[in-house]
Structures are given as structure tokens and as C-alpha cells.
Image 1: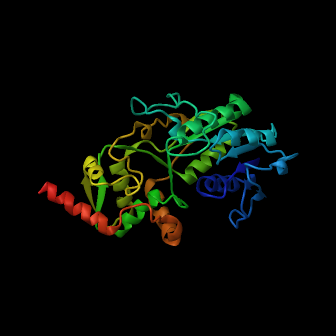
Image 2: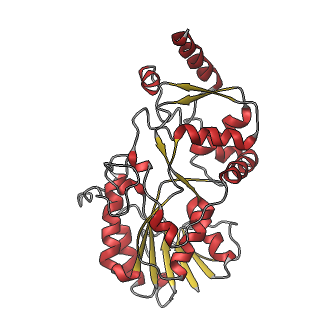
Image 3: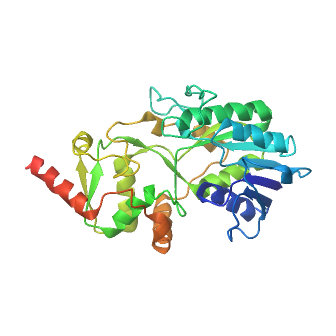
Length: 327
């Protein structure tokens, strides 16, 4: 197949592009900046928000849009591409869902209301509603019969330059007493970018339609950290600390990445059966951990972020203060 990927050179998009190349497809990437990544793909350099005339008279069997955050971007691409892009796969987010009433909710769960037409800034508050608007724009452009919508939860694995999950992998590798924030049973879901990539390509290959939550089966935040430590077979000791106590002491989700700040979110306990029925599979989580650590050690500039995580000193300070409340 001839596959066009909008984006494709970073993390999630890279996982999709590499999977398409590995499957033997003819891959074209549309992105802004020249790169040495993915040399076996054709690279078209353009800003998706600007002139897309280089897409004129070109045709693909499928298009995968990785990086649309505003509905105008979806419409602009369709205006430039028309029906020459083949089957369309739009990468959305689990953040489109309103908080479900129960764990295991499926893709028919209520979504947020679409963002107002004048909302153009992507923030923590507007991200989900804007993605809802993007989904609606994609449906208007390509029709339900020509569209697959992928709604991933937290994406993890090598090349994760968000530095969120790499924080926990690197922290587990360092060993010692690790602060694990509560509540212990707070839901958590993730998906490896490579597993998501291979499955997304399958959606394009088989022209599968519909909306799908892309995630591993739900676990808990405490189990995520426990599995991370276990995969590295180190000497780390997990210290479970009450989430409300941490919030009272000024700790937030930036200092402990991926943590829900003590408020469990059932949107991180979505059902995964619909995606699995179309072929989504997952590698052993221990492999995700070890591969992430290997990448993080090779790319410390990408795997760490000074604005994320507790410093060792602050972590030990909190652990000592928590221990004093338990004496």
C-alpha cells in the first residue's frame, strides 16, 4: 500500500511509520523539518497549517493523521487532499471521554461537548473538547465508512520524549526507597507506541472503520510502578504514601508524572475489547520497561525533563515526613 502519514517523525508517529515500513508499505511522511529519521520513507516538507499544494495530483491508499489538534487542521488537510488519501485514520485521544460512571466503559461512552468555534489554544482544559471537534470534522470530511478513529491513553516506550513514564523507569533503575503515591487502586492505562503503531497500520491495511480506545487492559498506578521495578530486578523498595497527604504537602502531577493527584480517573480504566477484536496486541510489559530504560540511558537529554519529577532530595524529605506520621 501507499500510505501517507501526517507527522510521523516523533514518538507516536514514528511508531506508526516504522511499523508501516516494516510491513513493506510505500510510506510518505508530511512534516515541517528535515530529519535523518526513517530514511526509507519519502519525506514531503510542509507546514500542515500552510500551503499544501505539494499534495496536488498525488494519491495514497490510506492516510494516517497523527498531529491534528484543531478542527481547522483536519478540514485544511481534506481541502488539499480530497478523496485522494484513501482510507483515513485519525489519531485522537482518550481525553475525549467524559469521566465514565464505571470501569470498563466502551467507545460508545459520552464524549465532551465539542469546543466552541473560537477556541484555538490547546490547554489541559481544551485538549479533549478540541479533539472531539477534530473527530467531528474528520467524520464530516471522510464519512463513517472511510474513517477509523484511534483514542490512545498514555503512550509509553522508547522515544518517549514527554519524559513522563521514563521518569519512573529511571527512578526504578536508581533503586533505594521509591515514593509511590496513592490511592493504590487508582486506575492506570498505557500502550507501547510500537504496539499502537503496528495495530494502526493494520486498521489502514484492512480499511477498518469505527472508533477504538487504544490501551493495554487497565491496571493501577501502584501496579504500574511495581511492574516497572520488577522488570529491572533491582533493589528498590516501594513506599506507598497517601495521595491526599501528598497534595497537602504541595506535590502534583508534574512532580510525580502520570499520577492523578489522588483523584482516581475511570477514564484510565476503559474497556479494550473492541480494539483487541481488530488485532491490537501487546508485548510483555517487562520488555516495554527494559527497552525504555535502554533508550533513556542512550538519550538522557530526551528522557528527562527538569520540570518533571521529584529531585532525590525532595523525595527523601517527603519520605521522612511521611514516615514520621506512621510512627
